[in-house]
Image 1 (cartoon, helix red, strand yellow):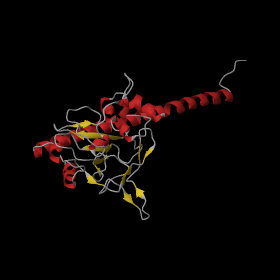
Image 2: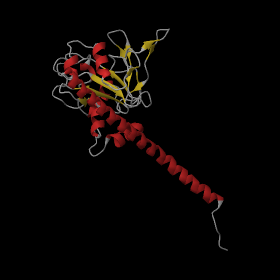
Image 3: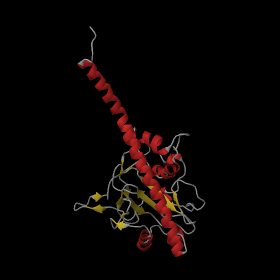
Image 4: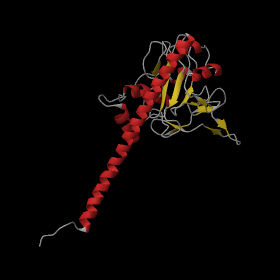
Length: 266
């Protein structure tokens, strides 16, 4: 007698296989979608920063590094406010990049930030007696109409690029990881913005200390976009690879899918 249809066991086995395949493919599809959104936000941020730099130079007659240059670390509040005034829709979120203290004297960061490898980065004490969880910490945090969060670091020395601007391209939305949604850029003396990690003849070179712009922002090479290190200076140059969409260490691989795929699966 010819049998039609499937047994319950066969149906359950088939459904199990379908479920297994879905469980394996859905995270990959989700990550690819998320990565594409992050790449789009990154490129938009890069474009907006360059527009800001060009407009500033056109109106002031000098570039941002020329205007803000100082022999001392730090950037004045007036200079920072002027720069951010060229960012359409920029509003202040905090008055300081150093976080705050609760009633018991415990440090409270503006929000949690993580190394590229996903471990929490707690920052540390600094000369002002404060504690920052962010490498850029010389101004208050700002946001813009795109939803990004921005903060500036130290003013450059005369003739050199700077300041560095750190951008969380999707705001407080997770993952809040260096090299994934948190990147660093630098204003140049020729009126542009470059990703930290890209060579330029006016990158800081007169560094005699590990503080300020000398501390973490003049690093070139794939070792400064490390998926394993908990030395924060080795997470500072990922923006260069993100912009060029190249894997830091593997030829022929890209950044937004191949490299970040490795990051997510560590």
